[in-house]
Structure formats: C-alpha cells, structure tokens
Length: 116
Image (tube, rainbow, N blue to C red; front, top):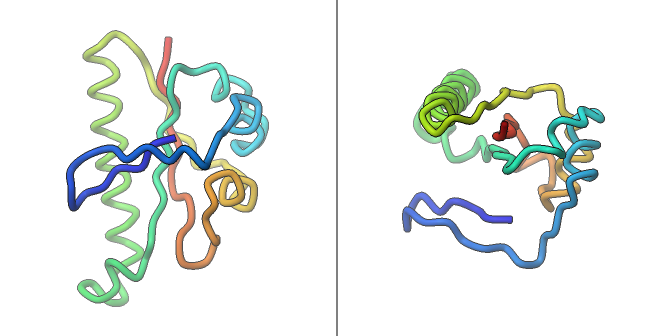
C-alpha cells in the first residue's frame, strides 16, 4: 500500500496496511476482477481541503478532479498495453475499514484496477 504525497511528489509506503486481493474485491461489492488486477488505484478525498477555496462548489470540484485523474489513468493504461475500469460501486464502509479511513473526514471517491 502506498499513499501519494502531493507536497513531496512521491509515493510513501504504508507498511501498516496490508490488503489482500479478496479484501479489495469484497470492498468493491464482490467484483472479482478487481482482486485479479495487477494494481488497484484508490482515490480518497478530504473535502475540507477544497472547501476553504471553493465553498459550496467543493463537492463538484472533487468529482470533476477525480474524473480527470481517472481519465489520465485510462490514457496511461492504454499507452502501456493494459486496461482499467473506473469503479464507483464500492462499499464505503468496507473500503474505509480496509484503508483505515474514518468515512467522515476522509473517504473513498473512486477505485480503478489496472491490468490485462
């Protein structure tokens, strides 16, 4: 498990969290192909970080930005001969528990497995 640090522009290893392929598939409403992928990207959001700037439009900005991120994952996946599938049908509580998120201040907004 890695977390992207935007301030440092690098991936940070989180050794305290281990997620099995079965766990991630269950967190995505038992969609088995998620657990069979080479890697799974999970985007979480902390709405407070956008509310100071965008106020009541914050939720729209979060949705739009996550869509842009996933679109770029589609492009990157295609360029290396793999595929991806944007998933929004996940179990919020299960995913929050897997990733040690509180579900209130930070929660999952998008999931995308990458593989062949």
